Length: 212
Image 1 (cartoon, helix red, strand yellow):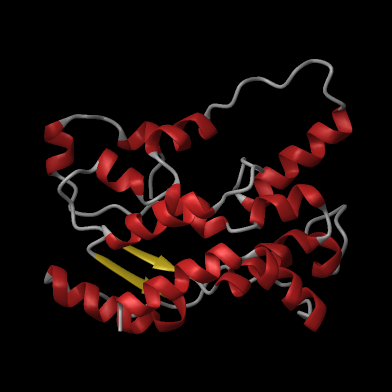
Image 2 (image 1 turned 180 degrees about the horizontal axis):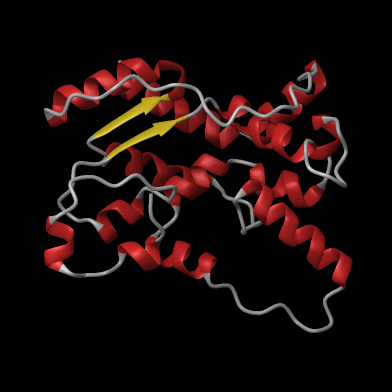
């Protein structure tokens, strides 16, 4: 797994020695960094995807220990809202700008800065700006442009299809990085997340329909 600085070598000899990359980046980075490669991606059911970082954050010192209280924190909720739509719609230029933000003003409140930086680290998301229907359209187009896309709840099927399409035998995938905090998802929290993830739910339904 690599980050853009390491991937963006533009060295044909180095690229020729690498048959595959696994990265945590917007899908647009695949064509930007490795044009011509077979592209595959796994998405996750939006409510489950949102609860996962909430459990991780609730396990951190100085945070509420209940996931519902963590989700009520604006700096967390804003970042998690329609996260997968944001990633699929993001251009390489958007992503590289997000990796190199401008320095915060000296007048920024230190406590606010601490909260923002902790939220960015805990969620892996720097941008709090909301996405809209135009982002959903871009996300659907990006998903349609992948060679293969699967869902985390059907991971074995995805791995089997990936092996068949690439001709590379692949091992089964085990579940890792399970948070120790298994906080209950109440009916209220489930409804709140579902309302916030309307675009993500539409994107996953689009992907599910395309893969039938």
